[in-house]
Length: 185
Image (tube, rainbow, N blue to C red; front, side, top):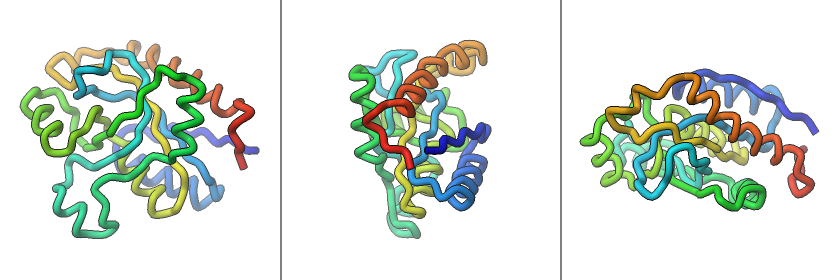
């Protein structure tokens, strides 16, 4: 078994490039993305961990996503990986992520995203990675921790707070890698 860890940086472009490099160079079969996210769903709590069950690009029109290659509005997280991660932490919830290049910190934009895409959380990478994995037939899941409510206060979240929150996500990934139920190739 081999585990490869990469810090890809922020945004869809970096996420896609590094994902493709990993897939091409190491013929990986599973890709796990970790990070922070903003929350649109009022039922979710700050600093709660969430798993991506579905991913979409919220900065691309729905019609364009469906009618142009690769003809997908939503990309699915790998069911096996989702089940294994939920087995390790039964409190973790599965959500729909929306990915865009912009930082969501406006209640009008937040409301529009909920209405248009029915997304629970927003980030800047996961749908790009999900699309890359879909095109390469590679299992994928994103594990994120909610650091803001995608409102005016979102810009006030410090990097130190984000780093502390990520420790919880990193612990789950380590447990996943070391779990006897996980078969890493």
